Length: 110
Length: 115
Figure 1: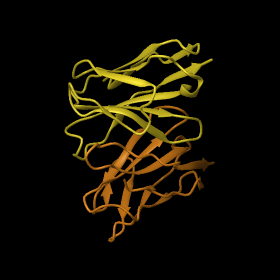
Figure 2: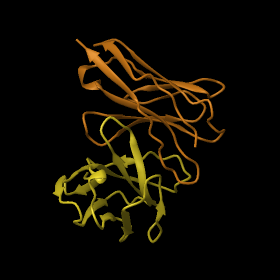
Figure 3: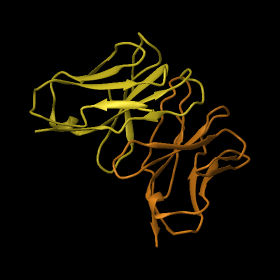
């Protein structure tokens, strides 16, 4: 199963873009990258996922490098409610299970 | 729009007691998962069920059993609870097959303390 590496913590000013990096150098060609976040101790909330192309939805944008060894989650206008732990996950082929790492704790400050 | 519902939300047990954590989803999803999350850590997979009638072990299955009762329900049982099983338990479900790319949807968790 491919592993991911994320910085343990980041700060972002309210209203600014939050860019959360993730390394997944051992990802296989047909494995997707998923981003989830967890606010306090609630259940993880799905944000976005992608394979090769950049993706955008109402919550965020996902930029995947051409070699697919890293990606960046972008929250375009961070709010205080975006303070959470963000998990970058490569989904395991065959089981569909999500291998969670430690994630990045994003603190949005006023 | 209930999504994934877990019961109970909180539970305190004594060592050696047994209990079953319930999970139900109303999204007609095929696959369901049980995770545990210990303080300061990411989630770890206990068991999963790719479809009704099938179950498979995840990373940390010891001390647990599961039942996929029907397509909607996937229960997790602790036969003899141990303090090391104190954790927050999350259930998740997914549309389509396990090898697809649909995202997992999570419940709000069951907070279990074992004394």
